[in-house]
Image 1 (cartoon, helix red, strand yellow):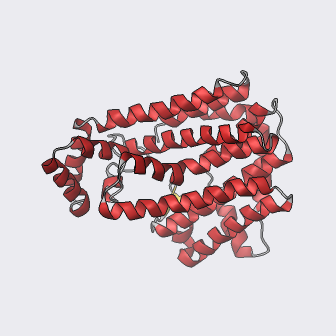
Image 2 (cartoon, one colour):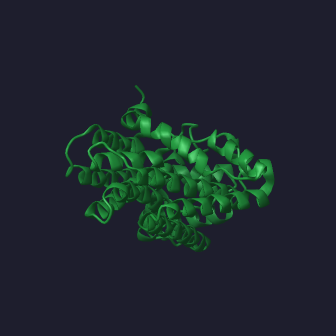
Image 3 (spheres, helix red, strand yellow):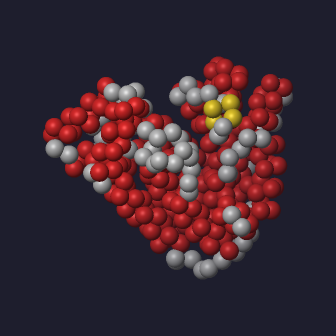
Length: 325
């Protein structure tokens, strides 16, 4: 059995019912909107985020979920989908998971409005049943995501990102939504318990490891996921590159910064940068840090009794660092 199927197995029923509820939560009286949301629903990815919600809830509640768990998973997926639609507009991206993006098919104006609609639906779902604690979790997450994106833009202009700032960017940009999934799962079955904060931290650690793994793909030979060197072309400061810069002489540092700022479209120069980062030990360092985040996340799970849900969460954490795309 594939890892993804093993992770999903203990929550198969919940995920099937969730998909139905999620589709319903997107419905509108506007035919164009329904056509677009139908397109989105039928091109969904691995649904890793709602899986985190259900697995956390079931592990903490003796294998049971409640209506609030479905609400939490729907909020997460609506907000996540909205952010992807908006990201494609901002990045002028025509493809998403191998399919045409919303902006490619229906243009930017419609894509922005669809993203806004999904955001508002996410907030309304939490208000329908007065789940204000769930609304707070997702609102804080959206604020963080926006701050992280803006911090990255601000720092990319100067290329002066330290390792600490890099962690802050990925914590806000990527890890905060996975943290929201896990704290949402905990809050749905154990509101106001210490588990809400513990699983926020658990999700954050998974998210940090996830983003570093993504950074590493930029240096791989395999043509899986994104094309090699795309982060360098986009002047993104990733952990392997930050480490290499910190290990470099002034002269080499100048060459690296000049390459990224002024020669990032030159394929030969990008290849030279990748080779230098590897030579400087940037990949090994990033892998070490990724494993530290993974181990800390698994350490938090040790406090809880064994169950199929704990086992699936453990598989999920390991999958984050072992995935091939």
